Every structure is written in C-alpha cells, then in structure tokens.
Length: 186
Picture 1: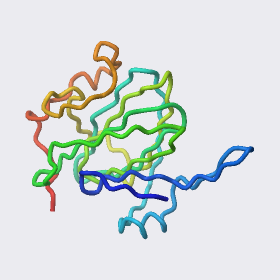
Picture 2 (picture 1 turned 30 degrees about the horizontal axis):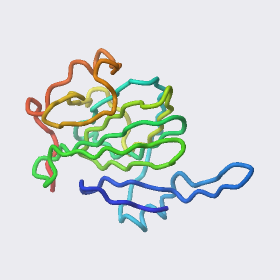
Picture 3 (picture 1 turned 135 degrees about the vertical axis):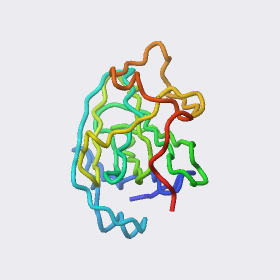
Picture 4 (picture 1 turned 180 degrees about the vertical axis):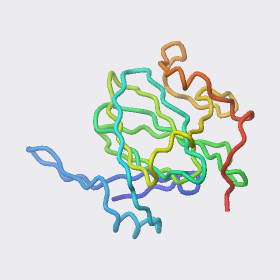
C-alpha cells in the first residue's frame, strides 16, 4: 500500500496495491500490520458500516464526541464520492481546515481519518456504495455535526447547491463558528 500524508496531521490517503489481469482484480483493502508499519498508527476497528446513496446526496459533517470518538477508514466500492475531513481539534495548526479527496470504485483510494475530524461526503456518480471502518461503536447520544455548507469552511462539494440532497437532520447542524468543539489537540 502507498500512504499519502495530507496537510492535516493524521489524515491519510491510502492507495492499495491492486493486482489485475483479464479475470479482474484483487487487493487487500486493509492489513493491520502493514498499516501500522507504514503509519505508526495502531488502530483496532470494531464496526464496519455501509451506505448507498444517489447523485447529489451529501452526508455530514459528522463526528462522535468524547469519550466515544472515532477514527475511520473509508472507501467506495461502487461509484464516486468527494470525501471530506475537517479538523475540529482546538489547538491544532490546521483547526478549521479540510481535506477533500475523490474516492471511487475505480481508483480504490481510501481515506483514514483520526479522532477529532468532522467527516462528510458528496455523491458525484449516479449511485455510490460507501463503506467505512470505525474504531469505536456508534453511540447516538454522542453524535455531533457541523453544517455541510458553512462558508467559513469553504468546501467545494463539486455539486450545484440546488441539486444537493440532505437528510432532515443534516439541514439543522450549527455553523462552524457557532459550535464548541469537544476536541483538543494534544
């Protein structure tokens, strides 16, 4: 696997080694030993999730508050999404900054998000199947989020705003400057 470090500490693009021939392809989507050796990160994933969404769906920007914070490893198995991580760790040199990476079934890229990131994605293809591993179980009482369209964050979701499809819950999140982060960078 190839690890690409981003401008936000701990947010990593993971490019697996893909073996392909006339029959198709094979790759390891995750290998704990190799991931640790290349990143120094020791993570134990406890829950895998999958969603299916149509073009224009934006999910996010979500996170779980302490003590139930989550690191995630995300990927797309069908279609294409723009995946976004926003640093919400107060005291971080990149607090309020984001990384946006196109993940697709074709490029097989993955994104690792450490604890302290708000996460979201926008579906750029007709349909996308999105999978992610988490190192903490889902706790609804610990849910947190920021508005996907916050002008302070200036995220280009690659979708015309009039075509964005949101859940009722994702329409009501606070703006970045109005929310109090529960994360502090050590």
